[in-house]
Amino acid sequence: MSPRPVLVVGATGRVGGAVLASLRSREVPVRALVRDPRALTACEAGLEVGRLDLRDPSTFADAVAGAGRLFLVRPPAIARVGPTVNAFVDAAVGAGIDHVVLASVAGADDNRLVPHHRIETHLRAAGVAHTLLRPGFFAQNLTGPYRQDIRHDDRLYVPAGQGRVAFVDVRDLGEVAAQVLEDPTGHVGAAYELTGPEAVTFDEVAALLSDALGRPVRYEPATVVGYARHLRQGGLPLTQTLVQTVLHVGLRRGDAAAVDPTLGRLLGRRPRTVADVIADHTHLWRPED
View 1: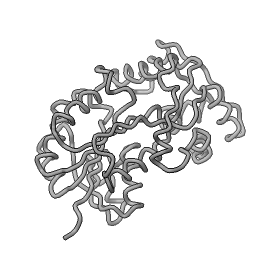
View 2 (view 1 turned 90 degrees about the vertical axis):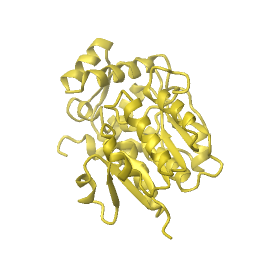
View 3 (view 1 turned 180 degrees about the vertical axis):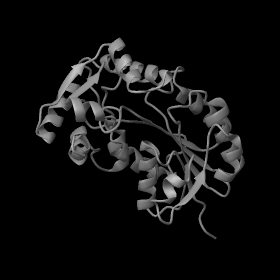
């Protein structure tokens, strides 16, 4: 009898993609769940792909059929998690999923304002074995949301003041999630706060970028209003603009400054630093690329 596949929600996204890659490197059977299966079937030979639209409950049954475990992440565009993410959890549990790994956020246990708090609460009420991963601030913001500012304007433009950030590499999160999904023994009911191994300022990140790219990159502290306007001009929807602005303002207060040793303990090695991420992705900030 073939082992039941692990479901990966958001397999084309930054977090889900990292989990998918780590599971495949471990040769764990996987079903990648995406809204448009064509996004993966064209480039992932031999990968089982399923359709999942969290806003369309009619896609739930086929997505979860015959699966064993679930990696769950909330798409940024979904704020109302009750009829979407939590309803999918119910469908997965009803279909026999026996363990859920949730990519939550740091502080979700106490912060009722973030949607992840409601997902965590629902998982506990659902009675399914689960593990909560609460990563801090992703270093991959440099390769995603900040990329165009760095690439074209040679600047980091965020309202973080001089706050320090213990950037975490999403690849390390993917590795930990895959480890738990392959064998949940010892992780049932655990909630892990995951950070990088050091906290740095955006001035220090700009200096690392400058050294790696061979051209000066500056950190320009944004005002709250200026940053929100910048995001809106870039086409980000209003709700996501508000979320991103609030998260970055929190960096001024040190919301992401604490360094937690848990990630290194789970990995069995030192987590990647923001300098590692920059060294691995310099091509993304070169204008010619």
